[in-house]
Image (cartoon, rainbow, N blue to C red; front, side):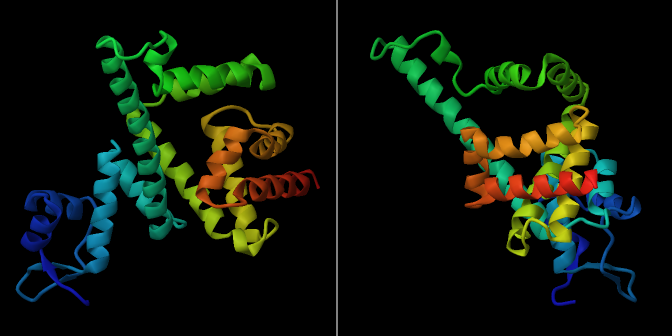
Length: 252
C-alpha cells in the first residue's frame, strides 16, 4: 500500500466516526486493505476513494444496500462515476443559480425597482419546467407514454430517483469517454443498449421506433442538443448516430 491509514486517521480525514467505518466493514461495503499483526485495520488510497464514493451517494440520499449494489457492479467505473457526480453537481449549480436569480428579481420587484409577471415568480422551479416538457412530450409521443413515465417516476422514493440519476450519469459519461471509438463500436453500442434498457425499465415502454425518434430528437430539438453539447462538442450528433445503428442492428 502506498499510504496507510488507521481507522482513527481515515475517520478524521473523512469526517465520519470510527463506528461508521466498522459498520461499513461489517456489511461488506468498505473493508480495510490490510489487517496488521496487531489486529489494527489499515486503509489505503483506494479505500479512501471508495469511501468518498460512499459519502457522495449518501449525500444524494441512497441507502447503504443500494450503494453496495451500485459499487459492486461489474461495470462500475470510478472515473465515470466521478464525472457523473461532477455533471450532476453542475446541474444543481445551474438550478440554484436560476433560483437565486428569481429570488433577487423578486426582492427588487417587492422594492418597486422592477416589474415581474406572475409567471416570472416561478422561473427555475423544476416542477414548472417538467410540466412544460410533459405538455410537449404529450404532443409528440402521446399522453399515455408521458403519463406512464410520470407514474413510474413519482412512484420512486427520493433515494431511488438519485440512484437512477447516478446510473444515467454513468451511462452518459461512459458514452462520452468512448466517442473516439466511433458510434458503431461494441463498447458504445453496449452503453446505448443500457440507455435503452434504462428508459424501458424506469420511464416508459420504449419501442425501437420511439428510441430511434428520441435519437433524432437529440439533434432536432435545440434544448437536447445544447444539453449534450455542454458535455462534449459533437455528442448530440454522435448519440443520434449510435442510437440509429443500435436500432438497425436490433431489427436485424
